[in-house]
Image (cartoon, rainbow, N blue to C red; front, side, top):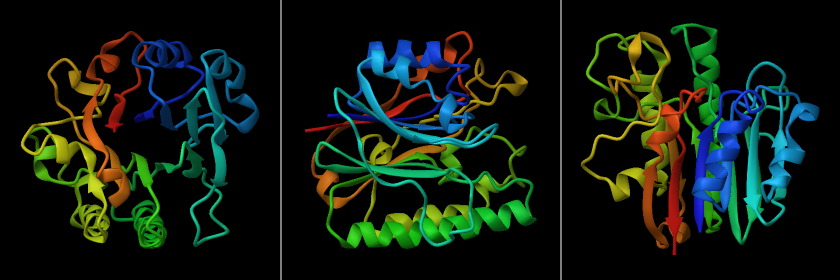
Length: 256
């Protein structure tokens, strides 16, 4: 079983890229972020023609998350992160697929910091930590996949000082990721590639893709039952180099 996460950065603008990757990689489950489309603008027919059922929560202009399943219909269990009913940002969706609970999340960026956006990032993260703790304690097979907008360690970003004040690398942000791991979640990429430099995002600016000036922002965290089945994990880097590409590349795990 192959489960992937892909910040598509506008699902309609990059639909051809998405469909090409689906055909080539044939993932069983895909978590999408940054749909940048209202619910009624989600390309349901094109996704279905590619052989995938889908659940999604859209949002015009920004945000938006979805879960696709090859040859199946995901069973929606939640379309918002609990803890703040007033939060209208479409950043979390959860569904059951083939006996695994899958979450697709798009965490707040938090810039500029300090400020209200960084405060929101940390408050949203506290809600994620609380919900993740409940899921882990339940003993379910769970995958928390998505764009966490956190660079967990210095080795997860290219050598630079330009990000020193960025919300993605602040101690408070990195502490969020560490607290999730402390609950028992397994960082799939680091489990399979403990010593390698792995990037999942390359900004469009300053020639960062050609010179491999990347960051690791997209993560798949596995509960204990899923981690036992982990066989492989990786990044489809070549997708970032295709014409009209998202600034993120798909990240995936293979399970026994």
